[in-house]
Image 1: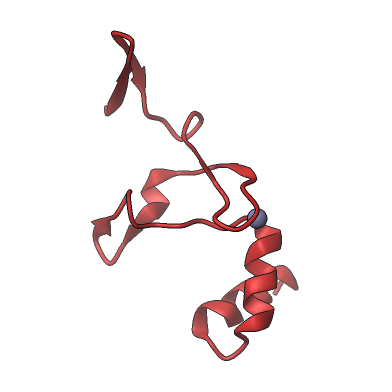
Image 2: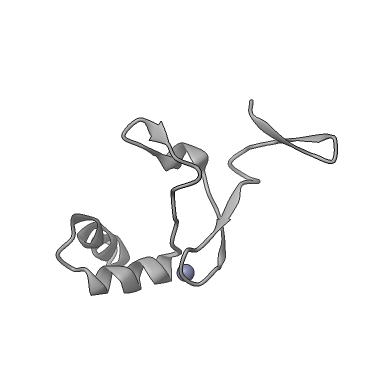
Length: 78
Ligand SMILES: [Zn+2]
C-alpha cells in the first residue's frame, strides 16, 4: 500500500481516491495510477491527462498520429 501524509494522517492511495485535472480544461478526473505506467515507468510529474472531450478535440487536430486514431476509434465506439 502507498499513502500520502496530510497533517499527520495517512491517506491510502487507491483507485477510488486518486484524481488529476484535465491538462486542457481543468476538469477533475479519477485516475488509476496503474494506468499511468508507460513502457514500464511511472512518471507522476511529467504526465498530462486529458478528459474524453479534450482528448477528442486534440485527436481531431492530429488525425495522423497513432494515439489520435485510437482516441477517434474509441470515441466512435469501435
Ligand atoms: Zn478537458
